[in-house]
Amino acid sequence: MPTITQVTTTDLIAVLPLLVLAGTGMVVLMWDAFEKRPSRIPLTLAVVGSLGAIAAALANIDHNGRAFRGMLLDSTYSNFYAIIFSIAAILAVLLAERNLKDEEVVIGEFAGLVLFAACGMVMLASGMDLIVTFLGLETMSIAFYVMAGLFRKSVRSNEAALKYFLLGSFSAGFFLYGIALLYGTFGSTNLDVMHRLLLNPADAARIVSTPIFWMGTAMLLVGFAFKIAAFPFHQWAPDVYDGAPTVVSGFMSTAGKAAAFSAFVLVFDVALAPVVANTAAQDKLQFILCLLAVGSMVYGNITAIAQTNVKRMLAYSSIAHAGYMLLGVATLNAEGSRAVAVYLTVYTLMQIGAFGVVAFIEKESDGGLFLNDYAGLARRKPMLAFIMTIMMLSLAGIPPLGGFFGKYYLFAAAIRAGLTPYAVIGVIASLVSVYFYLRLIVLMYFREQGETAYGTEIGKSVSILPAGGGAALAIPGTTGAWAALILAAVGLLVLGVAPAIMTGVVQNFFVQP
Amino acid sequence: MTTLTNYLAVSAVLFIIGTAGVLFRRNAIIIFMCIELMLNAVNLTLIAFSQFLGNQTGQILVFFVMTVAAAEAAVGLAIVIALFRNKETVEIDKINLLRL
Image (cartoon, rainbow over all chains, first blue to last red):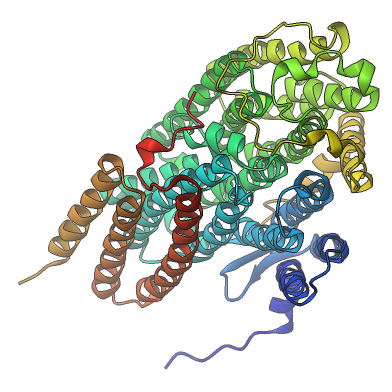
């Protein structure tokens, strides 16, 4: 007779960030349902809730254990990611008021969805059981499907939501099949149990020789690759990021990707890592991961050059960045997973900052999604142009910004794990990327408005926004958005100058209790 | 005598039928039905393994999958309705604003 275990206080403290996010999300939704006058209270509540989650995660950051009978991870790893997700949520909520005001979007719904998505993300980063990982993935994704379609009257937004929904649940099917097959192989869905079985040479040899193990791993890989938008599972990303409201694209492409990566690392670099002992199995797994990485880096960066729409350009560049981080996952060791975490932190700041600037421009010039709209921006909006420059330089990986150190750690970890050829390809691909990031800076600083450098193609200039964008110049809600942009820019500078802030924390990631 | 392999084979076939449906059908609702078929194929796998291994984790997971599928259906149909109001179609070939 199994004993019924009660939920202990330790368990509750461990999931405090999760509880705070979920609780605030529900309060925000309820507030929105009963309060008819538009107000800033839901947004403020969401920011406060996310700050609360950060505080809870900071309080837990020295923990090193499991909660809920081994189902949840409660360690530096999960709490570090919880902080990243909460920061991304704060940035998204701050940017939202300005971006969503003109559309018939109930702002409280957006704030609630951001918090629920963040909740799913925290589950992903702390899932030590594939059941939790699956639930986290779906909690996050379902919130994202709704957020992508937030502009209900806009066909483009509808279409983005439908595409994301169909491809997202399609990939969830693969992910789930992977879980089922691994469950069949290991007899458990717990990552710790898998890890322990693989550490035993006899069990490991048996497991690695079964086709079901490899099928399950491959299926899981497909599911994750979809979520992080890695080549060749990226097709949805440009369309969805282009059609979704800009601030939502920023949130999805940063926190969403970070969350998928956090679970990816837990499954592949922690649970399945002992396959390293089996050289044949290690080579097989590493080769597949590197293939995905190289494909994403090369394809993302080269295709981004051809884009004239800034949102699409950022979408392709996000595919390339997924490639860099996949290289970190492919190391199959703790150093690689630390590098991924460092990179995800700076990536979140720079990508959400870039999308934030896009949201500003899109409001001001009605449409404003094309490279042309950025010509002469430095003269019209020096501050915006400056922030965009920081974001672009950081995305390109130019020191002393955060992006440089992120890339450095990733490539160093890859080289130390013996993946030198792939790291070389990565460096070359990131050199290619400098071209299109710098092109935007050149446009902003050295071109006049209206000077045609990159033709606007007819048929693509369909604006998400209704006519009348001229009045948008005086819209309120700018304070929060500016605060978010400045926060992201300062964060990148600080992390670039003093990367020790992060590297110190990530050292404690996988310390055995 | 039905063995584990039989159950796994049936669910694999169901999963492949679902995948093929997603790839080849053009109606958003039918694609969605095919995705549900995939999820249910996985449920069959899970239950077969659960029975074979003699542990309950798989069956618990099936309940979670059904709950998630229900939540997904609610959101998915809402998205399809929102799109239909603007476009009057659910054929994904006819909604192609975002293609390059």
